[in-house]
Image (tube, rainbow, N blue to C red):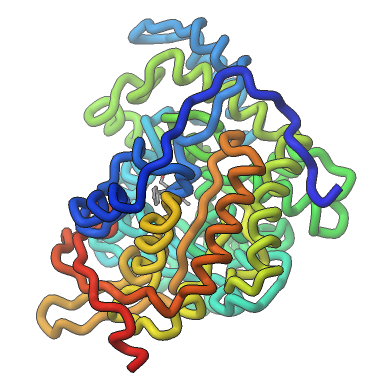
Length: 464
Ligand code: P70
């Protein structure tokens, strides 16, 4: 068998609709060529994100019926707290409605103007929340992460030399915490090894700097450790997770990923004073500490999801399905980032559309073409998301990688639908020279990718 088949069967189905090319053309124009603005009903296979898009299990749905909607002291909170402590091991468990609220609460409490927060690579909301505090979000991943062809097992690792240099340059007092994003989303869904985590910990210990995990896809990271790192083949995913988190002081979590829920997140940490300040802020902006912006039923679904996600058969299927898509594309010569990530296949837009200049957003152009021709929605992770245009000089700084991410929702699509995506992309790649670039006509001051608008440039403009 080429890949492990589904360790579940389907009990409820949600119909999806095919649209015509004309309809999609019109929708694209109305959306300003931004796929975030296209109604989901008009998407056939939606690979925009793996966040909040998972299918819950019958056990999670059963848990939803056990929601205790008491304002204070809901039994679902205590269940969730017990599960979170048993995996992550930190003292304080603070629920939030999603990941970015956990980030906002943490950074607004501990990050002051002029400080900096190192990470392997910050994802969009972490970066934005740090910059919102007038602090610097530093990406210190190993340099191999920026080479789309470099096929190494732990491409999400922190560059410890650069981390130490940074500490010496800015001074430890200016670094309230360091982070590790597991898996590293902006770098292709790549894992961080246990060894790198251990070494990051001991380096930070020497300077008294706390380590936090951005833990959204922790189970997928732990599965990669189980599969790839010497010494962990016989260790359960739960035990790997426990060891991993024991090297940290806390974590932020978007449970919309490896919590297997449609909404939910949390912050967990050991530091008592930080936890108290964060809790006070939580009450001001989010809700009482035993629900934190969620319903009791959501907390119950999250508690059950966190247990389920550690199941090895589930993870083998999950990572295997993503790998299946990546291998089909790779075998046909479609340029993808290697190795294949945990939650998504990342197309290398620079190589897919070499004739589209970087200031004409090749990643976005590819996303638009994929939707127009096949009704598939991916997301640009490149200049639109991470590039910055200086308003005074009009100069743009470009991120190292120009990618389109095809994120696979958990337990949602069949392998036939995945095969449809692969075939579509292989065909699109054959006709790539017909795809032209875009020009940006509107951008918001932060997180511009969600609301940006574009116009199309004529194809072949640069190929002569
Ligand atoms: C994604 C979503 C969310 C995220 C993350 C990491 C490593 C924190 C968060 C915030 C965001 C997204 C991107 C493109 C399209 C749709 C959605 N990532 N840290 O898909 O968590 O969303 O719960 O506030 O990846 O990767 P939250």
